Image (cartoon, rainbow over all chains, first blue to last red; front, top):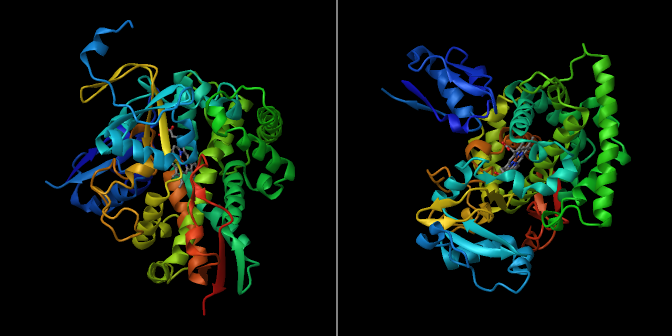
Length: 68
Length: 449
Ligand code: HEM
């Protein structure tokens, strides 16, 4: 699977970081909201459940999972 | 008239009929702005220009225009210029009165207080507040739930923002200060918030006193800096600008007020409507009770995690937000000429989108006036917009939904609810700045067997 994020919608709520810290970080930027940083664009299948939770529970629906 | 070349080449938005000299459409608009927006859209289409006491305002309708509105950044479509009425309420130098860089830093600190880590504490706080509230309900009774939810959400908001001590000592003085600030944000404040008016004088006095009160708490907390609170005030006090400097006490107070204003009546109005619609639709109510019993079958505790998997209740809440979106109208000021599909929206005009009208568009919501939580959700992200969208989508949306689900998770498995008054008397108050039911909103509750 591949991860796509729509960074314009991100406000740094950090649900993804809590659900799948292997795949997502939330980093400070110079101005404005902290933003998601994808650590693994093609995460292994073993992390699927975590990534799906991150996508589903993101309050701003920033994350999409694209199947290979 | 001295036309620019852009004006000569491009067409301008069509104008809505019925403008009166001087006041334009103000009267029709103030009487029921949701309906006025729908008329404007029906008459003129995607762009409809009307006149609010001299301010030329262009309503942008349909998902495409709404997306353009919501995604255009502050330098072109400014929220600050439209929301100047908040300046004397939040205080000087706060959010819409701060220079862009400082405003961004403040919004970021505000959102920090709503991040995942804090949300867990807030869930526990809200659960406790709801339990305390229902503790003396007995087996049956009748309440005005609009009033009750205004109280409850004031308690949860002060508890989450300012901590348990403040909440437990919530004084009449605080309530009256808060009331005076609220009264300062009525419709005329959007025309000129600095007029000589008793309500504005009361607003200014209230802000000064509230700044004193919160400053005292800040000073106290800075003395005991090793204590942890887990509330928003703690996050606001820790936040800093890019040069490392902390927020001033008055800026912190401003963020507290801004967050209360964003979250309070939006939440109380929605909670009231949810309970009213549950009372009107016992069949959905039963389905939701079954869902809640499944979620809480092993362990009755309400946590952020347990509240996340409630598709039936979520669909019900979304249908309530579709028909009764608390923020009916979102506005921006045009800072640079905008081209929307070949039509020119000129600098200086105001643009608006109407959640209320968008949610009643039959292309996306067939048979729009019917309450139907089972309806298909449109794929388009910009058709259903109770929380706005784009970069400035409601930062409290997760908090709001968590709180609403927590309230219903406590109430509904224990009690049934019925309307007390004739069904047609439960209506939206279309003259309020934040949509709410016309009070009182009386419901009768009975303990389930
Ligand atoms: C059902 C409840 C709520 C509704 C319907 C709602 C709706 C909205 C909408 C439509 C906007 C966008 C305004 C615009 O674009 O001009 C907004 C912004 C905002 N809301 Fe909410 N809101 C709710 C509850 C809350 C709560 C509980 C909080 C705080 C705890 C909150 C905090 C905010 C903040 C901070 C913003 C500004 C975000 C920014 O400027 O980036 N809201 N809300």
